[in-house]
Length: 311
Image (cartoon, rainbow, N blue to C red):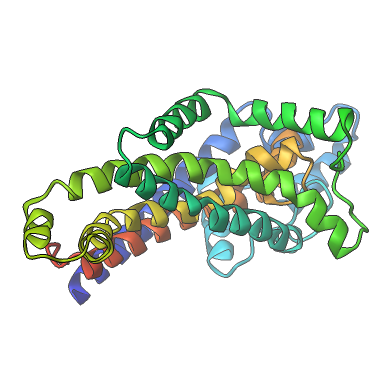
């Protein structure tokens, strides 16, 4: 197992290095890159040269990448082009808000597991058919569009929720504002987990060992929860590992729809402002979360499923 973990860790490190190099060079040579930020024709040549030297843009690209990588490994992603503050200071300022929104959305989204289990146990019922229709419609409708419609109706028409976050508001005001973003964020979990668990439960309860358990005279609740549900929950580990990355990527959509001042909104602002240091830091944070999530999922899968060997 330790050899497997070491091999996966080394693979993850090389993967992150490859991602960082690819994104760094693409952003440097793309139109509107950092060179355009310091080559505004309205600025004097002396000031342009000072800016290029200050941000290290006067050096060859491989040298720039090497210096950036060395500093990034120490947790230093440079300074923001937009407000001249350290990048990690800008990110740390907004991280708690994103963790709050994404964490609540993930926790409430886990209710989709319960919805899917009930649908599988009541296959063909009104509840099962209603859930299937709900998941089809929910996956067909763009969530950003649905968020805008709900926000306009609830905040502008019937005025039961605030249109913008209460930046200096009380805890109660923030809780009131977070109701809509959390509900919309949980929708993805309800749709994904419910459909997945329904499919897994239907497959498991048709297995021979479940029929054998019933033939032995075990109660239906024992068969369902001790045998069927426990085995149906095993693949959910992989999905939960991938959910770690969605703590950041999923927030981009809802934070911009609801003007929520988190990392997702910061990512869009940095892209429009051509703020390369902030953009690079956010890309690497997202990539690291994806890699860590998949690594945790692979290892955990080997522990929860005895049929899988970590070799």
